[in-house]
Image 1: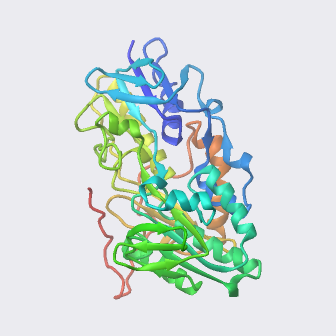
Image 2: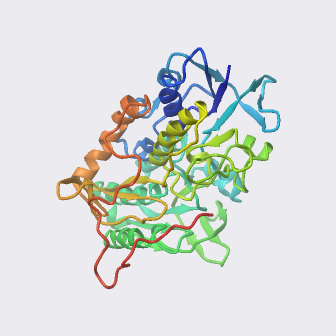
Length: 425
């Protein structure tokens, strides 16, 4: 009996299990999901924990409650994949053979990759919100903060949810203003990018927003190390940023077992075909979500949209037919900007975020590349939709592939005339 083995019970792995189990006959296919623990976090909620917007229960649930009947769930650490033998070796010595393997183990913050960061985290002057525990500690630090220089820093791209650091600085500015600390607080956003975001039009719009809020941007900042004794962030070019509170986004890397298996790039991300998510080296192996080297955002929307395409293709593959569906790199991201508003970005491999209305022209109701209250409410509504609809493989009210409906290419001569292509790696 053919066996589909899914490594990871995050967004992509859970969506795939829920969508494929009803479509693959139980007397013909077995499906197993492997995860290191029975924990499933709504990771966009990490951003809100430091500001008290969400409770722990709203962010953390168990993985098993979202997996369908007829899917075996194995809790174990993964040692390595043997792609020649079509078997996964678990850390406890067990082995799991597969006919097809899906790697969906995401990406993990790695403070150990930056000298001085582990010591700063231990000392409590350096914080991060890319883990559940880190976001909780940061909540305490913000509550105790009485003013000074706050530096929000991105070590290296790619990171999961590349707009999250921007959201944090905007929410922090609003937070300090609401507590009467605005005049005593300076915020700097240090990024390895030449601007606020990875694509020109969005970078300009977001950069202007930061400027209007009095947030300084330190571009092209390639960090060498953190000096936790002197509270300094130090770049390779000699620039130093002093801080009273450093909120850093550590280097993000794929799972270590990917490296041990010889399946990853230098950051342990799995190279795949950008349209089918299939390994170009091992045709029985696929990868989804943050675990891949797809040339688009490492975001929950990408994990979801690519999982939809994967499932459509896998049903064809299981029936002995060619895979005809192609993922276009579609991503959409809400950017919380504070003061009860948010922006929305919608883009894919070929088209950068553009202004306009989403999901329909004229009526919207959401604004693209523009702050609005509706965008903020939609972002808050995404959390229950995630738990109750998306994870369970039910239809969601937006298209899998990007649509140009409602979008417009700016006509201002100072703005790009055409959407900019994001080249593949």
